[in-house]
Image (cartoon, rainbow, N blue to C red; front, side):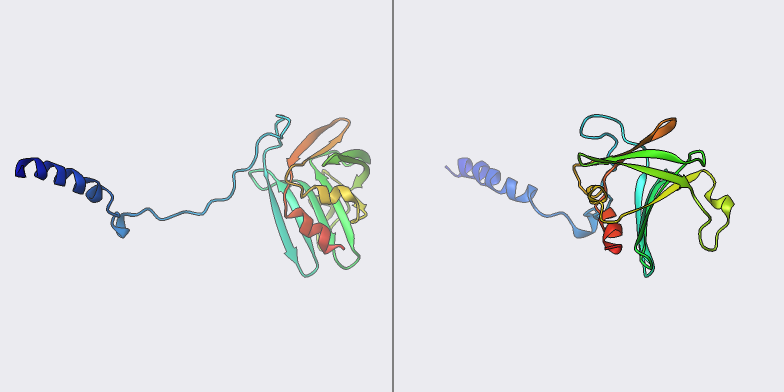
Length: 177
């Protein structure tokens, strides 16, 4: 009877030995990572490669969609001093162009003009950019933050942008409210 008890007792203790916590020194250190950038929209269409950069300062706020190398493709800037919301599209001929901006089931046609020099900058820094000052109360701007939305910026003869939404864009809109 004693010989039958020893294997049963050994089997009973085996799971306890296997479930002992690992040494804390051996435990991996958790690493924080950012959320993966989406590459396709809900409809399966490819999104423009890049990421959003959101910045806030005393004089305003901005959201820029930039390439992996940091070159801006699209910017929205709130100048708090005059509550101006400026949309800028980079990488286009400096000519007056009507762009269709669509997000969250809404769309708006925006006439963009060649970008003027920024305060303290020179005209050369703005070559290849067009911009428009728009009403910061436009509902389409709030749709830029809708997680289910994608943002399309198109014009005839210009490569389209198909951007993921970003919750931080609402801070730019609120800065001008």
